[in-house]
Amino acid sequence: MDFVTDRLALGNAADAAGPPAAVTALLCVAAELDAPPAGLRFHKVPIIDFRPIPAPLLAEAVDWIEAQGPAERVLVYCNAGVGRSTSVVVAHLCVAQGMGFGQAVEFVARRRPHMSILPGLLTAIDRVRASRQR
Image: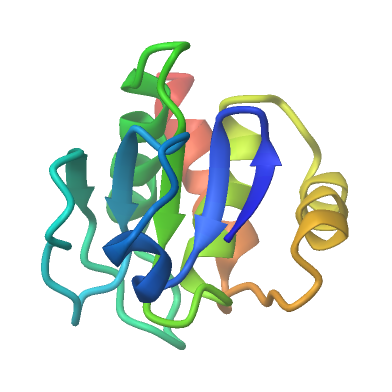
């Protein structure tokens, strides 16, 4: 598990099964995973690996992260903690924090070097941004 910001961490299913005490909320972005046994605030957005993230699912994940209070420390996770979770965090940085796409990818990669992004992520981010401007 790696903290990307003070309140946003990236991890895998094992990290979610036994998160450190600093984590207060879990966001699962893996369609194939069930809720972990931890008694923390939990939300699931069922994203399928190696496929583009539909904009409505990406918006749901970004919105849920944003809805957590400033004292919450959210662990965003998928099965391996490489593609879906990092893609959602990159999207959050772009949509909610106003970073450019390249800047957000570099920002996450500096903190979690073993990452990748799902295909079509920039297109999905653009759709989420456009839907917020309406």
